[in-house]
Image 1 (cartoon, rainbow over the protein chains, first blue to last red):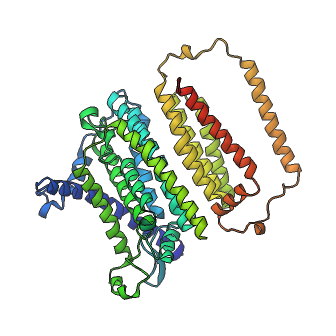
Image 2 (tube, rainbow over the protein chains, first blue to last red):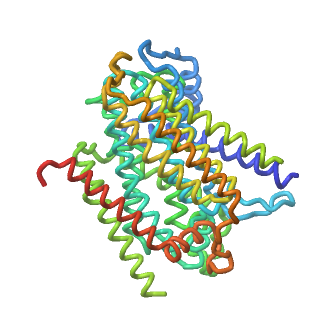
Length: 340
Length: 170
């Protein structure tokens, strides 16, 4: 009874809440880091060093007037923010935060579930998230959101190909689609896959930046050309949902990069007995530290790089990343056949 | 019992959304109902224990192909008056006859499927790998290699055809 119902429900509760809190604080972190990069202070008024800023933001967004334009497609307009938020959240179901641990007399696996097609599940759920953006642009019945949503969806579809191809080379290395299985195979291989698949990792990360519509690939939100992007007509909490979905997707990309390429919850050099003292940091903490590094890089990139032009973006996706990903996949396959 | 309830609920949703796809006036809404329909078909696959197929169904159909449908629907002018949709050359009777023929064919297939013994399947022991995805892959590259290659050939031809159509001068 407890093992079948109570523990899974508690896990879902913890993961969802942790994600939502993480997402809101991601926004604060981004404002702070960019402020520091530009020699400013960032939010300082609400709470010490502005740590309560997300709370103030949430209250503000919920109290704002909720506007639906008269000419909008009402049902689709309402559904679009939900459609973009839900896939971003249900992906966390298969991400392993740690190995099975013993808590209060129960064996608890530190992931909501482990399905044998975990990695494909992430890819397919993420592919449904495109609808939120397309429909937001269409339903607003306004030209800038429509242009922006066409840009965004073309970008997402293009980079999805390259990203999925890099995942295939990781699957070739691990021989399993289960997220926990991939971490375990890195333990058995005695190396993080980022070091045997550096090309795949770089393509994955660039593709991840593009798929989350982040700088330098944030063309769907290019203010100079498109006013606000596909969410121009949205206000209040519905706008916030798009915003939160973007940050939730960033956390997803960071967690997947950690799991696939940097050994997930494993400490550095998990097979070296001399470094046993590193176990003082719990495994889930290692996972969070590694993911946090990627999230920081996301913000760092935004503070550093200028935006791509749209044709450059498409050329990079189709003429550079996809051929490189295919070449990487072929080489991985050949090497695997030779070694086996 | 629980399985039957789940099956009939999912089947009812599939049929309901399928009806909405063809009856809805707004084409974008129609495409959206198609997505929902595909998602429920994926749920049916999960019930059958075919997780790999379910995930691929969502990835390829719900997430990939229908996005292209949406693009096409959004880019063509749909804000025409209802009478513009009326086609004077429409052959309603021919369409009805064809639909009836397909229905009859399906009925015969279903009826003969019950009468005939189950088709011989590859025994699970003959497959040297375990796991849903591994077994699908094994079968595709052994017993069904030629159909699989022909299907990929067809897709390749379609891709080349699209490129030739899109680019006037190559």
